[in-house]
Length: 470
Image (cartoon, rainbow, N blue to C red):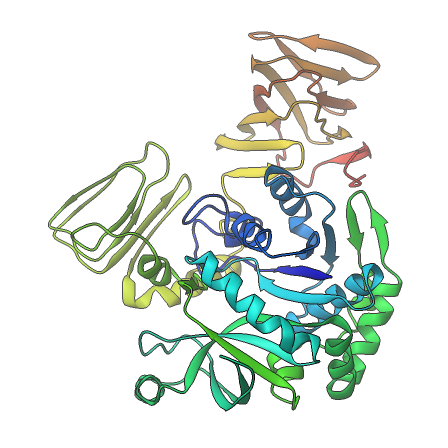
């Protein structure tokens, strides 16, 4: 059985301000149809005799992953929740243990959820080419044929030829300086390290046990203590906290004698920066990658991305990145795009929220948009999905006014339950137990006006919640 293992633990710093900790790049539509996560899953559906995927995701992103799988029409997937980030080696071990529950001879196709592949057919052929190696016990990786001297990727040096078109890995190489990268390109025997793998689940665990036995033992203990929660496999936090942190490259691939590489040219990009997205996108005659409402005069080789009705206009510039969101705007030189993470670090250090949340915050029941805020008041636009419900809750420091804009809302306030239609409103007094539910078949949209001495999201006491947050 071939089981895709989708690694979806990214934290969302390199494509700020669009990508953020609570909505990282794998869950965004950046190029092509659907989000990067959905595109990754869709690529696996073209493989023969492929099973439903296993997704390893951060606990914070569990509902994003579940909702996007549902939108993609994927059934039967297992979503394994990492309570803490421990890098790729432990994440893949969790996936391998989960796969062995389905099939003792399971083959794992390990794919990061945030990569872009332009040529799916070539990628599918490369997977088919690697399957015999994996069945024979090799740990196969996919090397991307380089088309430029790139300093942002690790490299793989090809060794002796194995089966048609594949090679033994001679060595893995760290990210080089420019002169070294140019030498690798001229040599012709080096490929970019893509971070994609194919191997038997039992063989990976065998190699991990040989080279990192403490890690394997700790992952086994955490997985054994995992519990089912709704559609998720929730890994025990205390046990997983004891797992050493390391990548699959360092923990296994650089140490095993059974590493193989299948070189492939499939239009691959890890979308590791705005500059990488500019390279991967469809640019106009002036070399500009434009999305949204943009106007340009004498502008070249730039990435311009506007949000909604926010017009971005540029005059007499080149090699820029200009990206807007409702609450932040980034302007950077394209060559300095990797340094965006320093802005994120400053936001964290100053205690600001823009590194974690967008103005529009997605929840399992829908979303809310913070329209306006001031001293002792806040205005939000709330959208509740059909059939969805917020928790039964109470606030100590604020009262709320709800005005229904569209749809029908079922309101619980104290011991009363009643319906509100369009243009109707209600008042939720401070300290009142309340709930908002959508009993209909269309989304409910309402405006919420909060007033009180403290308006933080942590002023909430949940008494009952269908999403397990009470």
